[in-house]
Length: 176
Image (cartoon, rainbow, N blue to C red):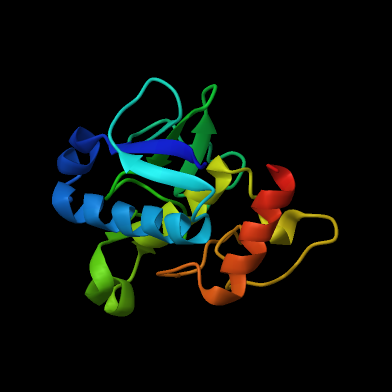
């Protein structure tokens, strides 16, 4: 029997930032689907709100802890088995290198655009829901910039076979 994790997209922040909420939801759903494939038979993902075991995706100012990492554009917070994944608002000041945050939606923008992928950020941040750490910040560090949990999340559109099995095995070891 698998555990159930629900998920919702809190649309007002995305709409206010000028992003199409349907495209945002589609990219988030793709990221959730990557984890559903990785944790098949262990975790079931359902769209919709519940009071326990729910991931809420939002776009909001003043929530992201940029002091921990000035390049941070998304973050996952745990509130007693409910999680909030926050994206830095589209167009917000990002850092000295990128004066404005730009989110990419869909294959075309991810491939040819300049900015951060909502899909890649979703894959990365949902990994934190299951306590996966940044491999490059562990002891000993594993420097693999293509790993979906790398601290500077790669521009990945999927978890990939190479990582899927090892993440699944780590999950089973952690939650027998």
